[in-house]
Length: 301
Image (cartoon, rainbow, N blue to C red; front, side):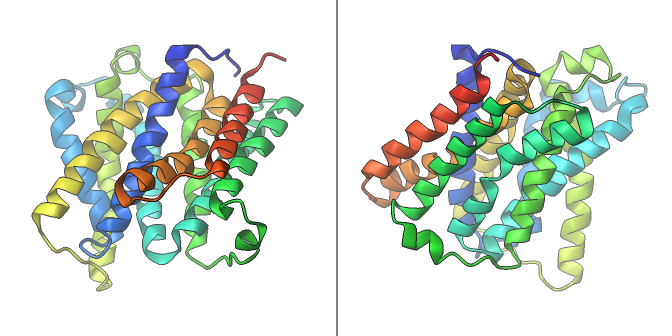
């Protein structure tokens, strides 16, 4: 799958990293108030309620969803129940620099998943683009200093993000790979997303239940938590998933994967805006590398 990037496709694929950067910042801020699996469950429960008025018929008995329920159950597991839960878990058990560093492997996972499971050939330009993109992420993480990277030590919690990145890569290919799912659901973004959320809530509920049964559950209700949940349900969930799905349909998973590496750059920008951290020259250099990697990967062979 290979497509030339148009301005509208670039906009679609840039919007999710902006929201996901906000998701990471907010997720770290509310970590003391809600345990990871519980936070994930509440987030998607709110998204489900917000989306329900737009696509409720898709869940009714006799809907064309049910003959394809296995596919939506897997999509819900990989994205809503799996990826997001692992992300919040990683933010509780690992350092932000480690989480973002390991998450920078996503473009490579995209290429490998496409090759191994979907028979998509990997070009030299795509490997070069992946190298440029990851180099840009490393530049942000190291703050332009090699010794900062040399001091990074991986911990068991980093495995969560590694698994999350692999899950997201396979999820992206499932979105783009031709399937026999009903056209009326494919054409209706709200119905398509609501079907995923419905099954994702089942997985999220099971994980949250296990969390509380093990004595690891935590929830401290407050207006701050309520506002945070509303933001991560609307922005990083509904709007970002809508834009990402449309972007993948246009550009393909391999190209879309490179845009994910804009997330740490946007995180740095948000930190400058809300935490008073001044941007540096290496942020601009990282932007050039990441965008250059996208352009090289998306260029016609």
